[in-house]
Image 1: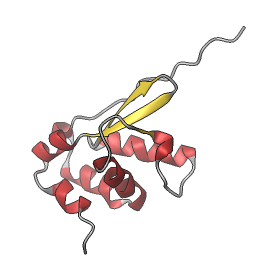
Image 2 (image 1 turned 120 degrees about the horizontal axis):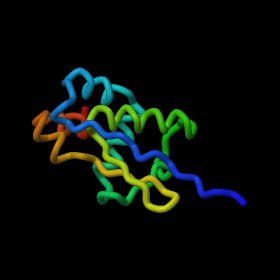
Image 3 (image 1 turned 180 degrees about the vertical axis):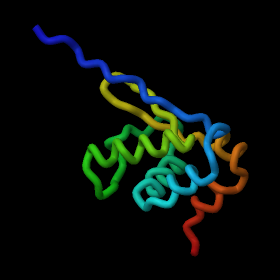
Image 4 (image 1 turned 30 degrees about the vertical axis):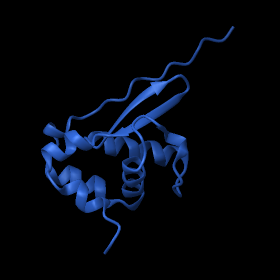
Length: 108
């Protein structure tokens, strides 16, 4: 008889506890920037981790989400077998006014 697998709930840093260099480093990576931009265009809690079109494997994607959580940018929760995400835009904007607006711009 097998027992159900339970994942550990993800740990989240609140943006108020994040140094600006941690936030900038998280946003400097092209894959993480893609994740943040896609989350910004999506309704909250509508995107599962595996729904993003990024050129990395599952383990690397998990790492990228860990970095984004540690930077206070993303919040995750489990819904059944899926882990869904939301961009912590309001909280992040309160801590770093204008930063997300700059990185979400698509014009040069």
